[in-house]
Image 1 (cartoon, rainbow, N blue to C red):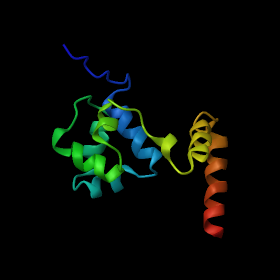
Image 2 (image 1 turned 45 degrees about the vertical axis):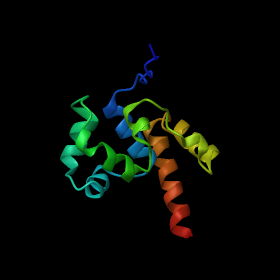
Image 3 (image 1 turned 120 degrees about the vertical axis):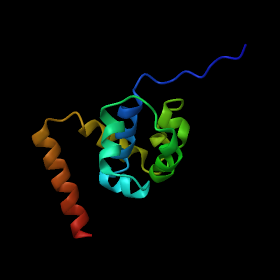
Image 4 (image 1 turned 90 degrees about the horizontal axis):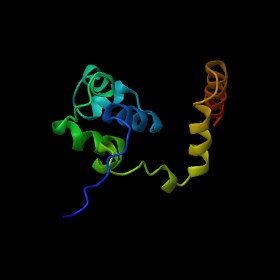
Length: 115
């Protein structure tokens, strides 16, 4: 008998929110891309652990990840990113106190506005 693929511990909703946020996409933006509402995205991110099979492929395409990554069969592939070091540092910034997170965001926005 073949070994079943191991599903990662994180729930679908948490994974979806994590991937969406790591891509810098809001719930409203994702909803528009998959032709649904922000309320539907919020529901799947927080209130249920059921995988929306009818939206799975469109969500994966909109977020530019594989369906395997979304359902937890494969880890996010940030490490394959051209700027993996930057992503790792930003991920660490999530653990800063809220005041410091706002300062980091403000600094990044100022740099982006300048260029």
